[in-house]
Image: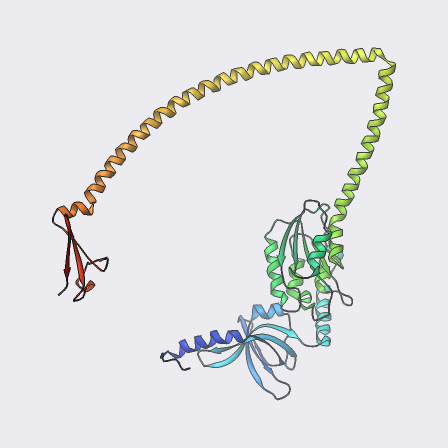
Length: 412
């Protein structure tokens, strides 16, 4: 159906671009014509269908490009997440690219090895820079997906030691998860936590794309508190797990590690309890032996106890006297405050009465009914007050309200 509205080109293109945003898709193709400028915040390239040569231009912000972590070159096969957009100054159609992924296990493996070598050379995986997990962690930040078995396994196995858990839900699968994970890290960086935990289950190299992303790895390396990861993988360890301060394979292992120092402390407390009870029993037996075999000792201790009691009694008497004096002073203060409060309350009532009288006079002077007695009137039509000639039309009925009644009339 054709719209009857006549609109400018700019407005039509805005409407068209709004509709095109709903056509976001994952598109596979070969990179060509890469145009990247150091001083600009964006870059251009094209993707080409390897079968028939179909080509479309692409636009991408550099911040999204850096998050994707893919080095572009002509002929490289990629998957882009993008939506079509029309550039208004020249009417050209291009793809607004949000994310780039490599295609194929081989390409991913090469990218993984290159980034791993680069980060190793910088010392990001060195044991010397890794921090110890706190002895008794209490406030724990957790990043993983709300759905799935990982978070359930973790919560099932975490001990009842009064943990305060700050949980941030995030996607953990594939390249699309990078932005979620980075946002979760930034969120928990602002929280008061003792340790950060980041977890996911096992999977293929493609599913671990986000955890082999350079920006994510550096964000974990620079996190202000120790980071504990539970990122399972059978073959190549994700770079994110290599840079964290401690990595274990499963969420259950993460929970057990956090519990370990508390369990050790609990065992120590129980051992101390047993030791104290044992020593107490020995002391009790010794005391019983002394009581049974030393009447003199009992008398001396009883005499000393009586002396302590007399001193305590004297101290108590002195304290009671001080309390009585204090109560008397408080009573006098309360009595004076009561008089002051009564005086102030009466003064407030008097002021309020004067204010009400003044307000009543003001309302009386401003009353519309009073104005009516002075010869004024109120004209209404259709329940609304008539202020202007254009408020009524010929044939409309009107009500003229005067001081002693209503006059009904009609506009002629």
